[in-house]
Length: 170
Length: 288
Image (cartoon, each protein chain N blue to C red):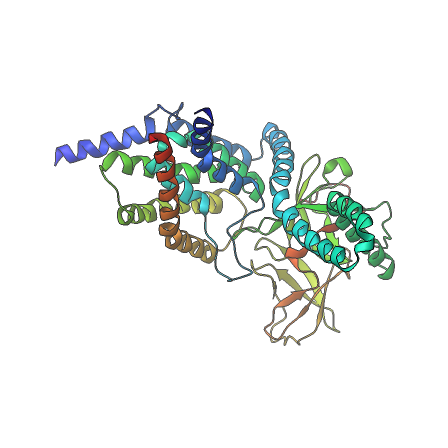
């Protein structure tokens, strides 16, 4: 009984651990060695999906902190990724408030809006207030692949979510 | 109509201000904190600089620990299978192999580091060296802590900071070939901007006539040459060296060679770095 409770609790921490791990470790989603333009932002998918589906397990503080860590590791000005993640979190919360039932199609459609506004915020801040230069083409590829790969992770996370719920109900 | 506008307003406000469950603070609080931190960091407030140094050092070490399984497990499994083969081939040496296996698994990481460092020292003695080093006191060897690939920035984190005398702008070499320059220093770590990064600009010289140009990173593995003389024709296989006009890099440090597309093939693959050298005698103040 106790083990099961611990298991459920650990599973609830899964998305947070994944978010932090991708922010802090060398593990990245930039596969230029395999396909030159393939890179995507898994953190944004994690934030969007879990805030939309189970906001109780992914607090704003964790999203903020993961963003800060990502900024340090990637060398961006502090707060940039946090803001980018929080914009996505805001959209997910808003969609959750406005809709009764969501499907993959509706999630996918609303995700692109969140993704574009989040990346636009990122791009505006970095180009207007810092001296960093980076390729808008790379960013568009990153946005495109993040959007394209969303359904794959949607199914993956939905499955994970169902196992957690199953355990909770059991 | 007014009802739907009300719904929109309520949902909008709720998304920004709602607390509860895992959310002890509303979203707007964190958004505001992020914006404040961003501007404090961007405009380099002195207390923020110190805070960032501490945060950077802490997060880099944590990141190194978090990345360790990614580095250790593949090599451990390779070694384990190799040991199994030896064991089957020579049963008489089973005991020795077992003990070697245990030791090898424990120190494998250290051995690899040692090997790389030895190679580095040997290279130093082979290449007489633009920087006349031989690992003298003006050169420090640093280990690459993190090499996280990013679609936006190409940089590495090394395990030496201003505690070891590293300053912003210092040239970074691998096997006497230029790989980049230091762009951020912390107490025990630094960030090196690689030549391939979009923000990298290095004055270079090439060809028999010492033609001057700027080597500009393009985000890919092969940087480009800019500001070449008009109608200058690039010849494939021309070696590129630093010109030293920036007063940061000593003239004549080899960088790469041109290919038939007008790109520069670097002598050192930017994503294959384990150890690098930082030349300390180039400057005593931060250059930017």
